[in-house]
Length: 116
Image (cartoon, rainbow, N blue to C red; front, side, top):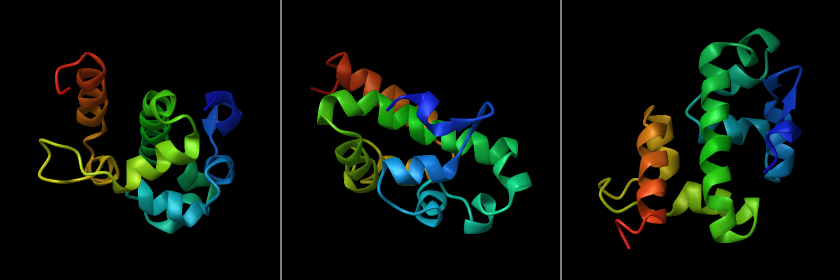
């Protein structure tokens, strides 16, 4: 996932992310723990919280995409694969709870062989 493909004027553009993942902007909002209104109004899309959550989604997908071979497979993992050590919660659920950094650290640990 090339970050530049998801940006417009230095901001993450939810519709670009949705197009790449073959879904809707409303689903992207839900996936990152925002209301659909957060991605419909330009002022809300530009807010720090919205931009942070979109960035976190892209960061997680970028980290796991090489492992799965495509952004669609990485997105499927993000939404559905329970992570060991997180009470069966998925990466999506953790990002929705504001714990994206823990997901990124988990991925780094797995890549380093800690959980292998």
